Length: 337
Image: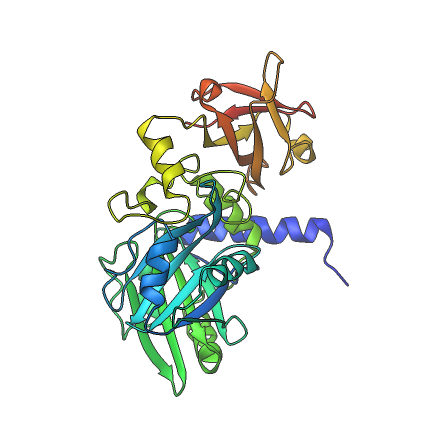
């Protein structure tokens, strides 16, 4: 029997209170996949079809990059973990990872590169919060997690055939770690988390944390409806590395400052009981009426206050901090600082 709505709300409230107290939360994400990319041409191929520089990723490190289409719109955003010159792991949070697969396969013509979906035997967790590194250090004292910046990678063979990798990301804001492990290591990892009293939290709390930190995610906020500049992903674009799919469009948008909208955070200012009046996909209008100025891409509810928060793309002419907007359903929203 499925839990009642009240039970779900109570679990979320308890997990939120624990997170605020301990500064740590563990998630088994319901989204995303991991691919192995094998062969001598993998680095060069990804370098030519994505926005960031790939060939100069040091061994044992990772870099985030973007697949864009011919119009400069986002196909997927993912991490490239360099295991060696001929072995990469591609980790995406997308709700539809087949987009990345299809796009890379489309441009793999004569290259010696094979893309393998490894999601069935590579499991993912997210460990997030201001004390995430300390929690991992307590769980895995064999490794040093201190002073590891975004893109830093740690790894170990936990059991025979059970490698585990720890990637510092920004998936839910500062201090987020993606843990990737082979199947033989799963029980040991869960046991170590349990030993230091870290239990999986509801994925709705992950949404609440990342939206509070204004972090977009592929499949919701990062789609073919927008380009990387609108999504605020300028740091994932190497303007010096040369051509890639969509490069001319993105360079022109940047050079001539043609970006017309941006991703912003908002909070609903109606009564908390009106939580159902804000939905993903809702159209956003000026508060005084008029034509559409944007749309909502992510929504979450803060467990403690019942406040609805979210992310939306809004035309720059209307995105001043504190501005009031309304959805086409009549819900009133305020742009966050």
